[in-house]
Image 1: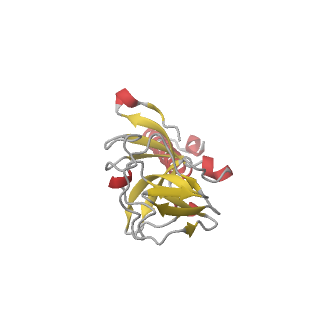
Image 2: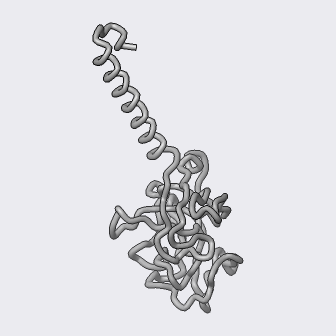
Image 3: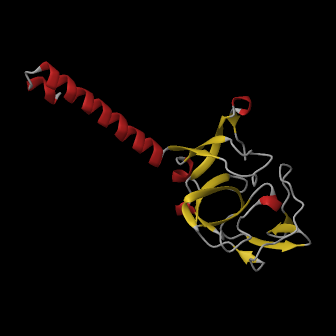
Length: 183
């Protein structure tokens, strides 16, 4: 190490500590920005899958190698306030046609059905349906459809893959619900 040439042991110790702290900080930034991130669930739009106050781990690695799939739960910044982020489920991938008829979402001609979703839907939002999901974008919905601002609303719209913060993979809190979050 560079500090071996320094004769004063106090200065050498200080420099070694500063080097260790700087290294730890750089590793933290690399992990946080490129591999994993912790997020808190704020609101009720993903009930019953995720509850208000849950803390989840977002994996950024998965989308380095593979595009988001139907059913993935993702986090992304809200366009109206980028310091805020939304957590929603991917319902439409590039090339899918999404329609809203008789209070149901139709994906590529098939009724969208998920057993975990609260589906008493009364609104298709302010988006004009049907829509075809463009390349590199994704249509997302909250599991609690009536309490969710999602791709049905133009203020959220389709989510570009390059804006995704990561895929929700693991619940860290509360202790009684720690575990994998499966799509």
